Image 1 (cartoon, one colour):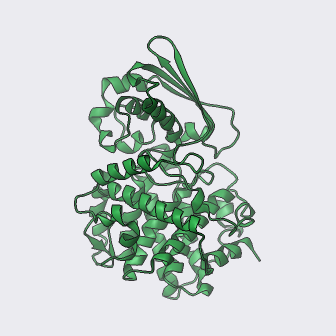
Image 2 (image 1 turned 45 degrees about the vertical axis):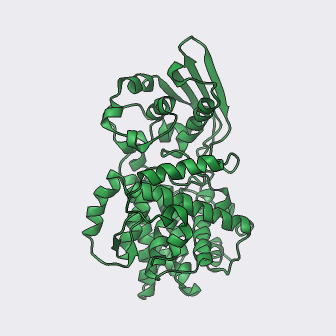
Amino acid sequence: MSRTQQILDFAAADHVMPDSARAAAMYFLGDTLAGGAAGAASDEAQSMLTAVQAWGTGDEARLLGSTSCLPATSAAWFNAFAIHCLEWDAVHEPAVVHALSVVTGALLASADRLDGCDPDAFLTALAVGVDIASGMGIAATGAMQFFRPATAGLIGAALAVARLEGIAEQNFPDILGLAYSQAAGTMQAHVEASIALPLQIANAARSAITAVDLVRAGMNGPHDPLEGPFGYFKLFEPGDLARYTDDLGKSWLIENVSTKPFPSGRASHGILGAIDIMLRDGCLNGADVVAVDIAAPPLIHRLVGRPYKTDMTPGYARLCLPFLVPLMLRDHIIDPRCFTPQEFTNPALQNLGQKVTVRIDDNPDHNALAPQRLSLLLADGSTVNREIAGNLGSPESPMSEAQTQSKRDLARGLASSNADPRIFDHPLAYATEPK
């Protein structure tokens, strides 16, 4: 049996999730919907909404955080954009895949056009999609060139939608092939901190729905899209599917996903989390810090080591440690409402931001987010040093109930007043009971 066939069999299998996996799916659904509702109210999402509405009208599926409805493909697009646009969405760190974003965005639209679905069926489809999307990242053996959260996310999302909508198992190869045929999105958007980054996530969610619809209409797709001579691991990035499939089904990867406590790139969270702990413990006064030195793996430097700019966009700021560190030291929180031109030109933030240095250490792993070393120079000439082994919100360092509630409260405050309260209070009911 090919490794691709193993994935297809897993996608269609009659799973009974263990309690731990079901609990993880519940937790991350709530986390994803809360962050997505906040993202839906952002200026970026509201600007995109006009374009999405121009694609066509319909009431097939709800828009997350809104009272509006659109065709399922358009709703999936908007949902996924909203989930990722604030950089607050969960990530499988070893895979470097925001595994919930595309999968959840597509499944919400799918469940709506089914006029609701069984809660356990939804959670299982979510966990299956997250597993496959994360597995594609685990299989990768090189640094990202294409934007893996979109390309791998599309593969997981399409098979998750097929499962939820009861597509016959013999059609899964065509759905996988047609999903792959639509895969796109490169790291250039990340390098430039372009709004195209969440657009790539959005396009992937729409393509997941489209792949299912095309197969339902009788279309077929290539049947060796992952391992073939022009398949995913030949064209998108090098990889070895055995790294995923050898352990496929032995555990659920959704249990290994990390929550993002701060609305910023995950690569910033090791440093921000360490500063947050020092501020909360009272062993650091943010006003005393005059310079910051960070030694980190290449991926940290590549993703969030970009220089401070007074004319940056919110998307750039979310991926800029030299801005995020001074903001955390000043406010003890990362609030998206501070990503404004007025704050970017704030002399105090700018002065310290220009003294934040992010250096590449000797870690040979292109996908590593840790360890990192943080050194804070204080006004009296002394230094505070911290070794950072992992990120807050990871399975090894989970957020407390209080920290989780703090995130949900901030997200609720950012969301539209028209947002369905079930997003925050009963997320599974929101996802599976559209009326």
